[in-house]
Picture 1 (cartoon, helix red, strand yellow):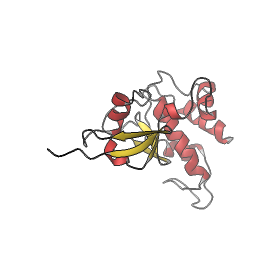
Picture 2 (cartoon, rainbow, N blue to C red):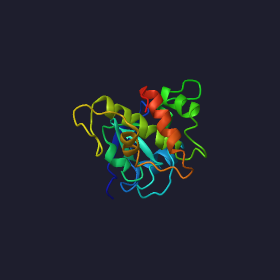
Picture 3 (cartoon, rainbow, N blue to C red):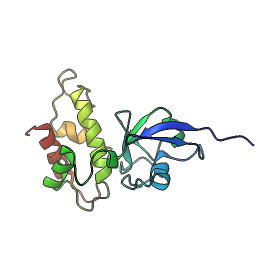
Length: 171
């Protein structure tokens, strides 16, 4: 019998080793084996963004990537960003701006926004960036960058307000 390949990586600062089914998604591994239920299974097809996590600083739909592919990577889920006793500025802003309603998409929204803010700080342009050198975080820019995360409740304007508050940008 052949042995399953393995992957060693970090999840929220903790070293893990995955040696299960090589077809298992990162989402299912996080939820089922690591009991990190903050990452949500929405569509399971990479269309809604509820499963967004941060892998090596980049936004990833965890339903579309395999756990075995994370060898050597650093994975951050919503549980790794903050906790009720010590929320991040973005989490506090989501609460203050009512950036959620049912809350199902919120972990993915916050992970995506966290990585998006880092992209902006690095000056990475998006599809709608008018100036490729000096990217301005306008509402249009923020909406484009967050377009991979859907909210069935329609809290989009509040999500943008929360992000804008953290960026200290007025529109």
